[in-house]
View 1: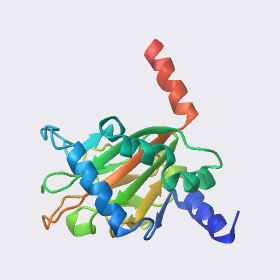
View 2: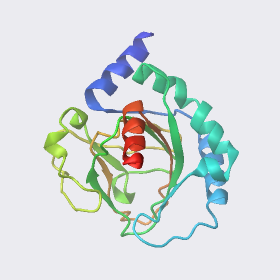
View 3: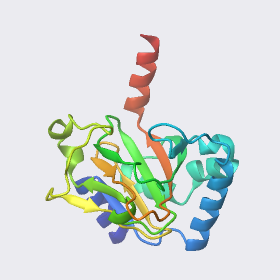
View 4: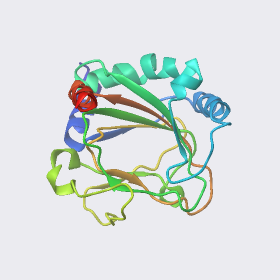
Length: 209
């Protein structure tokens, strides 16, 4: 493992989240965005979290290739110490003032990637994290994505301001959220989600019960 890779893994293990700047080119980010817009054009936009479209890989094989063999996969192998298990690719938009996801964590192993397709900061609802929260699950177990909790003054807050082509990689158990889009500018992102074997096992067990 190279020194840079070792440092990235150390940051990921400590914080539960890392951001790699200019991971893909702006041209690639534009291509991802255009394909995602085309693939989701017929999706109804009603109800809470209607700005999230999962299953892009079922709508366009381009996203299946990204999910399984994209440039993030070898990075994830380095961070996890094993090949990630692909679950789904998603398209996130945030153009409405009321589309807010409150602080929460997901009780599952694995890893999530989020590539910015637009300039994003706190004004248009960038992702935010509590660094190291994946190691303190009980402390944050009460959080719910649909229930407001103010963590804006938390000492371990990371506001993930990003540019097109930047990538955030984080553990599902790391507390994360995104605020309202207050300035109305486009804030789109491409997400790939991978789960661990322990989650897949518990999911199958629950299905049989």
